[in-house]
Image (cartoon, rainbow, N blue to C red; front, top):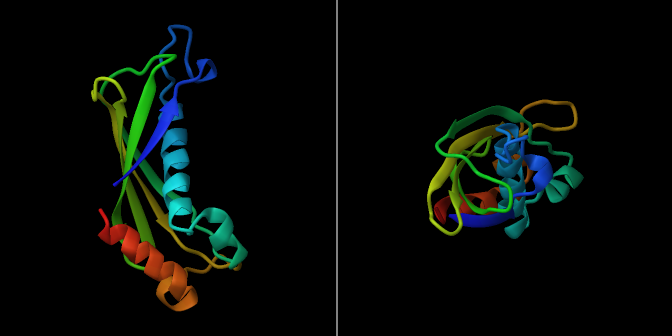
Length: 138
């Protein structure tokens, strides 16, 4: 599990200073980018190899409100990796109380420049090995 920390900004809130629900999805992406970069599998690295990883689906369940000025920890882990697909799980918690704010998952695949499905095991074995280690570390 990887923990990414985010301080809530005013622009992420509504008139009641409560975080708008769409921002949790953005936080998922921030955390996912950070964890992938930490093992040298960031989007910039993979895209230089001609591989993209679109989001196929997002699920978020809101458990409690997050407010302006609070800091949250986003626990990020690989729920599934098989060379073709990557599912990432997230638990967003208040950094002070540990109260769960949101849980969710994103689902991804890997495509080449022609938008054809790629098996990282064959197309990018060094990335595949790093992803396998990341998934095993969960």
